[in-house]
Length: 292
Image (cartoon, rainbow, N blue to C red):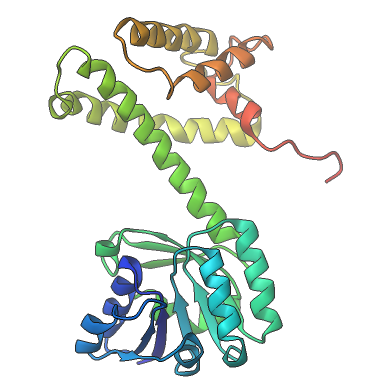
């Protein structure tokens, strides 16, 4: 059993602390706003008087606060107690923020892991919870068994920004999926068709289309968007144009799909009508600097 401190007692922090308590660990908690530790204290958690006291109480501190400004404030206030300890920061942020925080904590003598939680609070400790980690490999190896109790622990590398990068990339895929769902549902809603009834058709269709993604990934990695093309960009552009024309005719907003049609047309203008739609990736990807 480990001594673990949890800093930040929002919905996710509460779930993390509760899970560790359930597993029998000694838990110390602290939250900037008083009063949030009552339920956890009733289950056996110790409430620290300050962030510094919380860090001092344990070898490993798991922090999950509102944003990196709040995380930075915690680190400043606990700076004198961080040396020789492990800080696991599960606060949502950007890769650049994670790298700056890793450098700052290293300067204070602490080992740093940044993380991305791919789960909702009720999922913590469950079968489908996934948490991404990057940063100090020795720290991850030393505490992997404990971290696994929160959910599958996937270590991505020594660059502290990698967990955040993957977290945000996965979320962007999710939001793209949601955007397609919202547009499609709004289109049928224009004729009074209920979302629940329509989803009986849409759900299986979207699941089937997921099967196309491995092929697109292969084309992106190879840079060859002209192999094994079933429905080329020219056909797909005409189809998307029809979708948006119908959308306007139905009085539905086109905001979610307009940018996609614009990318299709830009790629089409380069003479790429016969390639796959994966070719639009080349318009989105980061342009590499020659020799870099």
